[in-house]
Image (cartoon, rainbow, N blue to C red):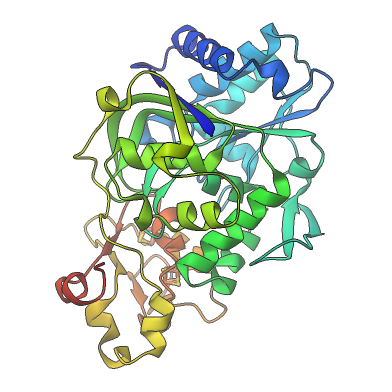
Length: 384
Ligand code: SF4
Ligand code: SF4
């Protein structure tokens, strides 16, 4: 059995979050049974992109502050933080997300997440090598601080996926080219979690993101904190909170198969507030199975694939022609290019090359890229 604590919390108020966190950790048996005071701790927020807290792309700084304050009060002194954004420098992301100010106040150093080294993982099922950020390698224990969000590629993103930020820089994009099938990508993420073994997960679901996540969705009040030592149990609880079939979430499927955690109802002990009370059945998320689109590419639907497969689409009314999406495309021969000069024309997709990784959609600063599922695809491809 794994335990997941659900705590109702309606505001980004540090003392309120602190209190909920304290209660949650006590019901899990105490933080001292999870991490010793001698250990060096990495707080790993979600810094997907340098966006302000109200955009709900990143972990709110009040969560970060409550965790830091609680650890300090419990006698922990070796506290650090860091994450590698999709593009741009970690320091910039830290400043824009509001984390930097809190870290300065409590004297919490930002570890090195711009460079790292190749780590071999002999037990890897899908991946035996990772480019891990130096900061993640320097610590003894990781406390993961994910954000509750919808996700075009993976349906939802939560605790297990958030560990992907321990892979530094553009290596994350390269992983998308190596693991194009969503289930293989999820398997790689599961391997990464098996390698780094984060000890505790505290999910920011006070104001979550629904719709066009993980970078361009809409804020939605879920008023929830989820706390667990098991990332898969936590992500499964997130899925249940939004009434999403856990079988539509590749990371839950692979993480369960590969022993990262458990996902079935009878294997998870829920503590704290009731799931029914916090349930949001209308949470806007793609309620369709995830398909191996690479198989679809190579299979018999190939001639019609662009009429059938989900794809990123640019909203020209919002696009400012900045080129970040082009820069984010991990393919050597980009699937998204400018037909003319940078800043003068809209980027254009070559859907025959596009591997549907949605890095471009994640990184667009203007929320100008939507992932659309053609009607024919809904009828013929994305169904049970
Ligand atoms: S990142 Fe967004 S705003 Fe910038 S060019 Fe691409 S679609 Fe347009
Ligand atoms: S165009 Fe976008 S979705 Fe397609 S491969 Fe490039 S980044 Fe991925």
